[in-house]
Image 1 (cartoon, rainbow, N blue to C red):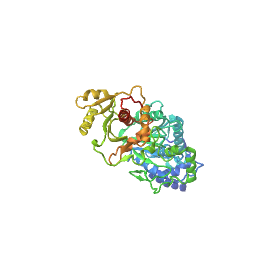
Image 2: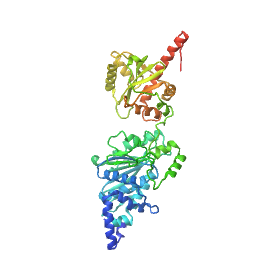
Image 3: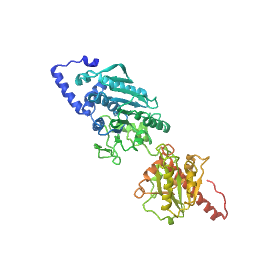
Image 4: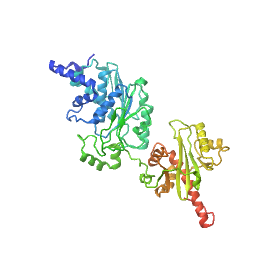
Length: 497
C-alpha cells in the first residue's frame, strides 16, 4: 500500500535521475539526509553546515547500525537538537527499517507531539515521497499526531515524563529534554529520572537490539545526563558552546576538533557577540550549565568552591597516625546495598592542634554482611584507632551490636532532632577558616567526587559523605573546645556550639 502523498508525485526522466542520485547519497549518509531534508521542516531557514551537526549524524547513524546502542547528547539550546534527533533521524531510519517502533518522550506532551507531527509531515512531503518512494504508508486505523502506525508494522508514539505508562513496546527510544529547565527542582529532576529508568526505557521490544538516545542541555548536577554517566554502556557526546581545553569531548568515533579555549561551537549561527549577550542575560551559572554543558558544582550553598581551592587545603604526603593528636573513624550506614539507597561510607579523620585532616575514605553500596566486612578491614588497617562513630540510624545499631566485642570504641551517634543541613552548617566554618585539609588527588583519587558531593549538598543525589564528615568534625571540634576550656579555665564547663 502506498501513501496518498506518493501517488501525486511524478518526475521527468532527468528529475528522476537526480532524485535517484540524491536518494542513494541520503541512504548512505545521515549527514547528507540532514542537509537535503532540512528545507522540508524549516522552509524559511537555510541549512547552516557545522562540524557538530556531522558529529551528531555520525553518532546517530552508528546507533541505527547498532554500533553503539546507548547515546547521550548534550548541546546548547537553539542548535537544532530536536530537529536532528527527534524529527529527521527517525524519518531516515524508516527508509531502511520501516518496521521500527519508536517511543519519543519529553517533559511536556506538547513538545513530544510537536516532533511526532513534524516527522510525519516530513514523510508526507512531495520530496520524501518522490525521492525515496517508500512502499509503505499510514494505516487508516491509527494515524494521529501523538501515535501513528505505518503499514510495515512500524509506529511512533509520543509520551511525556510523569505521564501514564504505555502498554506498547518499541525498538528505539528518544528522550528529548527530560527536564523543564524553567521549573527544574531536585525533586522534579529525580522524578524525571525515575520515570525514564522505570517506565520509558523498560518498554524495549528486543533487548539486544534496543537503542536509547538522550538529548538535551545540562540543567544541574544530578540531571538525567549526569545520571547516565554512571552507566558504562552510554556514549556521551558533549558539545559546549564555548570550548574548554580542560573539557575535551572524545568518544569512540569523535574528538572535539577545537584546539583553544573559547572557540565557539556554531559560528554560523552564534558569533562571539551573540554568545556574550546570552551570558549577560542568563547569568554565569545558567549559561555555563545550558550552553557550556558545565553546571556549577556549587549548587548547594552550604559549602563554597573557593574553600576547596585555597593554598594549603590539600596535602600531598600522608602522615603516620601517631602524628595526629586525635584520630577517629566516622561511619554513615545504609539499610540495604542496592541502587535505590545511599552508599555506605566510612571516613578516617585526624586532628592536629586546631586543624582537621581527612585521611582515608571507604565507600560502596554494601548490604549488612559486606558492611560488617568493611568495618573489619578498616579495623585491621588501623588497629590503634579507638573511636568509631556510627550514626544511630539505618544499619548502624545492628553493626554496633554485632561488632562491639571485636572492635572497641563503637559509639552510636544520635542525630534525632537535628537536620542534615543544620549539622553541615555547624561545621562549614571550619572549611571557610581553612582549618580542614584533604589529601590531594595523587594519593586519594576519590577526593574529587567527595568535594563534588559537598558542593552539591543539600540538592545532590547523595549526602552520605556530608553526614560522615559532619559527624567527625563535630566530634573533633567539640572535643578540642572542651580541652581548651579545661586548660584555660581550670574547670569543666559545658561548651555548646
